Length: 111
Image (cartoon, rainbow, N blue to C red; front, side, top):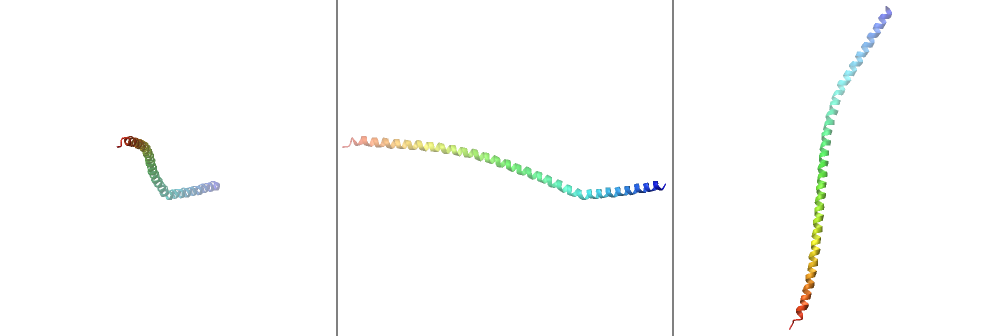
């Protein structure tokens, strides 16, 4: 009987220790819960900020593409203007030569 009483007392002691440990776990969980909530809020904020940064990067990429297209258009226009200037220069030389020839022809008719 004494052995049974000792075993019952031992079981009670083990149960009391288990209760204390569960209470410690519950207390710890209550202490950690606000920290977990704060981490969750911070993670959501970071996610929102990452999306904003991603949108800004997309916008920059679009601007870069538009700028490249505009630069190509400017380069093409510059080449066209250069070709036109070369044609004008060639025409001016040709006119100068014609004027010189005309001057020589007219000089033969001088009095």
